[in-house]
Every structure is written in structure tokens, then in C-alpha cells.
Length: 236
Image (cartoon, rainbow, N blue to C red; front, side, top):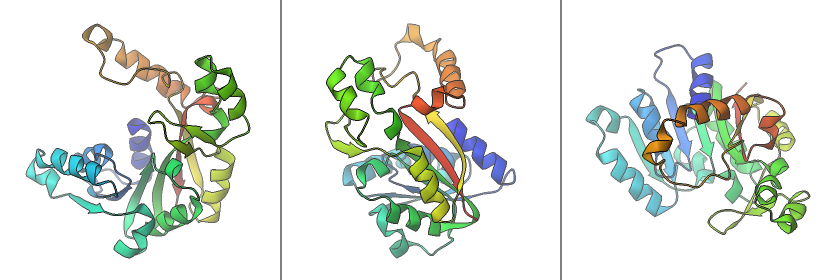
């Protein structure tokens, strides 16, 4: 997904431009730090104190130049209008957040308002049109059958959360003035893979695996059955 985001940034903004980035629901700050290392000014918003502490710890070991480019805000992503002026950012990230929001329309509208004209909105969501894939491939036929007509699922943490449909988000993005520009599938082949680092003998396969995932995430019909969708909207 990082490669997809970098591709969209490179295609939309002049090379070398230092962008103003807002990362809503930044978690432990992986994307925020990566973009700050690339020279961008990044503001991360996160409401979970544990995640904020992890992000601060990760930031503390970065070079001074990177630390100066990152601002961390402990707060709810639905309150961006309280913290920032409209049009304050060139790029807004909202990755892995919408599944925890019962009604995402207000959140998305608020994020779109944060974008300057021509700004990029990057969303990573669970794919509601492929919810039957994970239980089906695991042989859980009861859950698979129930997933066809649902947008709810139990995640790996055991929480009941929500997924989004591509057509619905496409309509929503058009309605908030940040119409869909590009979209990709994420975790087409690897959704069943165990979490954790690769063992040494597997690391040589990593680049091949990533190349296969990257290709599938851009190719029909594979991208439509991906576990996650990466959508990029552009502020008009």
C-alpha cells in the first residue's frame, strides 16, 4: 500500500514539494514516520493513548530533522474541525479507521474539508464485497454464507466491526467533493497469512510475494476480492 500511496503523491504533486500531511488514526505512526522521513510535514491524530505512546517512542529515536516534521495530536478523527482550519493539508490519510465508525459519512466529509484544492484523500477500508473470502477459504461455511449479505464481521481482535462497499464509497466521495481517482486491492493473496516477521529462509521470497500482491491489487478481477481496498480521492 505504501507504494500505491507514493505513486499517487508522485503523480499529483511536483517532485521535491514538501507536503502537509494529516494522518487520522495513525496508530503507532508507521505511515506518519515514513512520510516525515521523506521530508513532508506530518500531523498524526490518534485517540488510543497506548498507540500515541508507541508513536512517541518511535519518534523519539528518529533524527532531529524527522522529529521536527511530526506533530502528534491525541484526539478523535471526527474532531478535525476543532484542531485544524479547512484546506490545511495536501494529503489526508485515513487507514484502517472506517471499520470502527458506525456512520462514516460525517467523518469523511470532515476529512475532505481539511484538503486544499487538488489534495489527496487516501482511505484503507475492509472490503464488504469480499467478506465471505476469509471464512470461506478457512472452511467456515456458516460464517461465509452469512457474509454475503452483511457489512459486519469479527476482526482478528475479536471485535465486531464494519466493512465498506466500493460502490457506496465511490458515491460518498463524489458527494463530499473528493471524487474517486484510483483504487487498489490490498491483501489479495495474503489475508490468510500469519502475522509476524518472516523467518530467514523465507525472506528471499518476500520481493516475489510483494510483486504478486502489487500486480493483483491493480488487476481485475483479483482486486475486487481483496481483503482491503485502498481508495484515493482528489479534492476538486
